[in-house]
Each structure stands twice: as structure tokens, then as C-alpha cells.
Length: 338
Ligand code: SF4
Ligand code: SF4
Image (cartoon, rainbow, N blue to C red; front, side):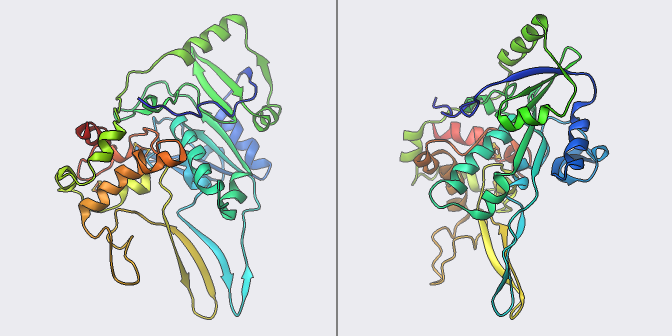
């Protein structure tokens, strides 16, 4: 099994502290007071969504994973790239500092993968303008969801790659900083150093492997299965709805269109490789006109083509399994290839 090469690689040093109080809510209040745009999970009925919040009271942290991913903070569903009339009037880059509070280890790793896509080689200036102002405050997982498989990619759900990591262990609040930005942020709070017993408690918590699903990927078999009828069988019930890609923290396809003829805005909006028109060329040729070809593409994108960049483009969050209306399960599909 190939695992991620970059787990915890950006960590230069760590401080480990204890906080007496509601750290996550206090963190949001602090960030808002300092002018940050804050994204946090909001409870809507029986599920949570990452959203921009205007007060700490809006946030709720009683979830395993919010339904959407935290990527909206750096790669929003819709954004204005240019405002124009007879010429370009404005290019609205992000000016405000941004924070995500409540991100889990899978989504935090996904942002590192988006960095590879948007910042290596051609640099996307819009993504960059948000990413360089981003602070991440992560929560460790106590238990996995039924379709989580992040550990298959070397992700430790008890040790997210974030600026600040929050854990609730044995009734105590542990907050660790893993970057200079995290250390600066924690200096805003009244903290005490963890004691020896507390350090042991935290270390045991971080070392524990969680019982969760596992994906077994055989890249060579995948490579050889490109023309297999297997993909037609898998795609039979696919609705081409794009839910799997919209909820995926590592998917980055987008479309660009203009609204307004002489005066208007140029918009970038998420797109999906599962939509029939996604690959329609101006010649009217469509290389992935069939549903099974589009579905196959999603699996090859995640587990084969992405290896050109050195990593799988899946972090095992399980959202595409949880919410696919056709019950298409990425772990089972990849096992089927084997
Ligand atoms: S695999 Fe599932 S979620 Fe994805 S497009 Fe098909 S039906 Fe929709
Ligand atoms: S492919 Fe599915 S399991 Fe993997 S990161 Fe995307 S939504 Fe999560």
C-alpha cells in the first residue's frame, strides 16, 4: 500500500498547552474580533455544513464530519474573477485574513493537495491570495464515521496537519501549535503547559489507531483495467449528478463564464467531471460522452493520473460514499479492480 509522503512534513516545531474554557468558541470570537473571515461548521437539522460565520454562537462542533468540505474557504463554489465594462475595472483578490475552525485531518490534508494543484507550476493568483492568509484550527477525531478510511493514506485523524490542533481528552482541552502562525495565535490565549501525566495522555491518544475501513489500491491492475467492461457495470446506476465531486475535498474542476455583455462579471464556479458537457469540445466531439467513461475518469483521476504529482487525490473522508444516490462506494469499486 502506498501512503502519503507528506504527512506532518510541514511541522517545524510544536507547543503543547492546556486551556480551561470553550477553546473553539473563544477561538472564533478572537478571530472575528481581529477581522478574520471565519469558516466553521453550522448545524442545519441533522447535519453540519462548513459556512462563513459571523459569531461563535453560530458554530456547532457536534459532528464527525461536516457534509461539505472545508475547501470552500480557499476554493469557493463561486467567485468573481474580474469585473469589467469597456475594460477590466477590478480584479478582486482576497484582502481579508481567513480561518477555518473545526477542520478535521482529512480536509486539512486535502488543502495540502489543493496547494499542489493550484500553487505548483502555474500559480493560481486567486487561490494564492486566500491560501497565504489562511489559519487552520483543527479538531482531532474521537471516533471515525462509518465510511472513513483516511488512515489508508497515512493520515492520522488524531494529529491533523494544521496550524493549531484542538483535542478533548479525558475531560481536558489540549491545544497544540504546529506552525509559527499557530504559535502566534495561541499567544492570544491564557494557557498553561501540559504536565507529564497530561503529556502521556495526549501521546497515547495520538498513537491510537482507529478502527475504520481500508482501501487497497493496485495501481498496476487499475492501469490495465482501463478498457474493462467493469466500468460499465459500476456505472449502471450512476445519475451523473456530480454530488461525489462537489462534496470531495480534493476535487478542483471549475468552469469560467461571463455574466453581462458590455458590463458584467467573469465568474469561476465549480464544475464536475461527472457532467455530460464537462468535456464537450468546440468541435462538438466529446471524449467522455458516456456515463461510464466519466465515472471511470473519477477513479483514474484519484488513483492513477494524480500520481504524476506524487500522491493519491483522495483523503478517505467517505463523503462520496455517504451521499451518492446510487450507492457507488469508492472503497468497494477499487477493491473490485483488484
Ligand atoms: S457516482 Fe454517485 S454521486 Fe457521483 S455522479 Fe454518479 S450517482 Fe452522483
Ligand atoms: S474521493 Fe470520496 S473519499 Fe476520497 S476524498 Fe473525495 S469524497 Fe472523500
